[in-house]
Amino acid sequence: MGNLFKCPSKQTKPRRAQLAAVSWDSRQTSLSPSQFLRRQQVLQLYRKILRAIREVPAEADRRYLKDWAREEFRRNKDATEEDAIRMMITQGNMQLQELQRTLKLAKS
Image (cartoon, rainbow, N blue to C red; front, side, top):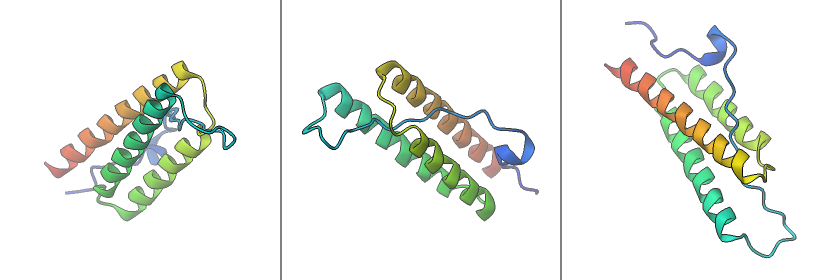
């Protein structure tokens, strides 16, 4: 049985998800309740993505996906607009579900 998991960049240019971490200015003394909740959602999504990536069978694919996820979150870490952050979380969750479905198919 061949490698059923296909790394997005190896086939076509991937549709980039706009993942974000809620920006927190170091001069601020605390986060607002909504910022705190968004930050928790982003961190939870990041952890779930990294856990799912650990299940990828091929080392090269794992490395690529891990680097890709880190870069996406890092690139969007300064996002502050609530609507944009919600959209990025939704897109990230959709990509996580797609990765989980692909891994499930690869195992069957």
